[in-house]
Amino acid sequence: QKEVEQDPGPLSVPEGAIVSLNCTYSNSAFQYFMWYRQYSRKGPELLMYTYSSGNKEDGRFTAQVDKSSKYISLFIRDSQPSDSATYLCAISDMGRRALTFGSGTRLQVQP
Amino acid sequence: EAQVTQNPRYLITVTGKKLTVTCSQNMNHEYMSWYRQDPGLGLRQIYYSMNVEVTDKGDVPEGYKVSRKEKRNFPLILESPSPNQTSLYFCASRNDVNGEQYFGPGTRLTVT
Image (cartoon, rainbow over all chains, first blue to last red; front, side, top):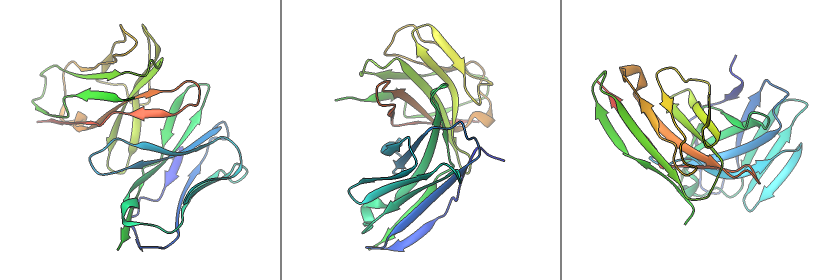
């Protein structure tokens, strides 16, 4: 079993839709939870970062963490074609400082 | 501008021919790392360095070497590349205050 599981998609939605992206993880020692966005032929860029259970909002993006279920989500409201990218969840045990990534979900927002 | 740079961006080589991919960051970060990205497997850490002269293995270190002689540079060395090292490689450096990792633009390596 992988430490972090993420549905690879692709996920295709119409412009304006609410998008839900999810990851599950197996190691309860993970404490820090991140979402990265990766455009084609580019390096990942950090979207959201949180270390506690609950919701964190930033503009159209909301990150949700449920440590009891080992489940994290990223919601995108009013999705735009420019949101089309691969979204990677990343989880860290800060003692090691390494990031464990999900395999990424490819999102396509249709105009 | 805060950034991580990698060179070359694209490289095609043959089995067994030693190569080095350079990585440099201008943010004075102590922690740097190398990842490879493969379809369906996501990003996997190869090696990391917590400071100058301090390096350690990540999840997939076999066939790779690194060095950290200066804080800003963290080259990845493939002494004898093999076709299974064909991949997309990313260097990253980490802000030790807020934990954010900054990634380079990637190096696409093909080993024939």
